[in-house]
Length: 572
Image 1: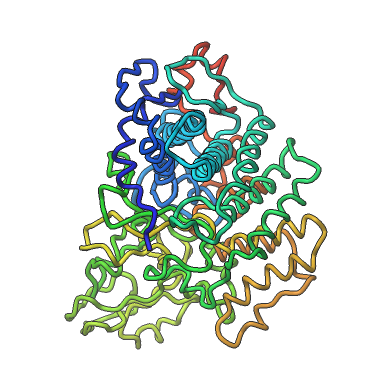
Image 2 (image 1 turned 45 degrees about the horizontal axis):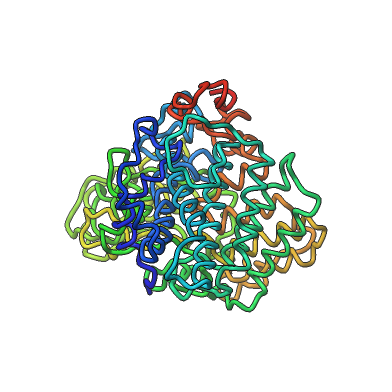
């Protein structure tokens, strides 16, 4: 069900969005507001609605894109780099991560573009006619929700930035960096103003619009984040409990799906576990951002980046089902061997990762690059197993008896076969609806918030509030759902096992790959510690400065007063 189609609104409004010039546009100092057509159109009922819809479009630059994935999964404890792709400074924390990186500037610009579209809607709503007060109030609430989210993402990645809470109509060189307190105050003010005015439903009557439970989930996350900063409020944890428990226990109708695998069933995208999703469609014209020179390929393209190099192996060729193996991200040893150590009771590893490949290119082969126990030749029929990744080393003699290649995780140690091209493949985002094997524009919705995430956040809030029994219920709900049939009791943990470290690991198991890990590590104050422990590629480089990204140099250069008025983040 795709009730909320942004296509028309984005196409109409996309060209006039630049009229509301923010300080973030690359050529901001050269811009002139010259088109009264677009300006006047926004003052009409149709233009107002188009502008609200366009305010959502900036989400696609972050959620379901390679750019957003790079900002959120690279450089963590659970994902390492694959063989291909660029922007690896985000993972290695080396000199490649600097203020001139184009993705740093492009995401910054896109988030501000979304903010200024929200500002235009909020400011002009007061004079718009032809829209009922009820609809107007709801649309303004949507834009306050989006503005709060956009500023929260800016804050998490860059710290205090320029707070613009009114529409920017003319270019300006006057920018300043807000304090952490001012950032949180503005974000929370927007979200708490939006909360009572948004639709109090599991999903909006136009699916994809912001809702009250989506806002409640975000508010809970923001309060948990602020609670671990110098700007913390005395009641941050209790407020997080209030908002998150309303999502979990309210009358909206959310529920955990009985089978973990069904959450990511591409034929069941509108389901009871999805709290809020960013929409994509099969129409390339709708799926902004379009392909560009920065590696963004359009649509929800996360299906591209987790795949290993299966298509050059015996019995295999590239197809739509197994996907295009861009080999950007591979799971770390910590994720595979520690977080997912229990594969007897916990189904999430098997239902999140592909470990078996079946032949789609029948024939006889004598070259087996991944398993040196194979000699002579093997003949594969379509559907025969060609490769199997096993958890532990299998004796060479036993491997030799298998009619397929047995791959054992080695993680750069002797006896294993894992490398930057060969690894377990995360399947959460695979998209078999693509029309052919070269097509990159994915059409799956991107789940920004889902109930298992909410319940783990609520468990964290309860634990911080000293309510251990309540926290235990939430964690065990998530774990029992993840159990293989008949293993629910074995998946239930006791009070003695419950801790913040346990919740951190549980979130890795449940949410791996879902564009949240870097933000989690940062808000916990654990980014440097856990990267040093579990990310050998970055352990020597990461420092406290890497809790923030470098401010785009172009932003500093176009500010009157330069780095004195708009200082770079320390260490860059």
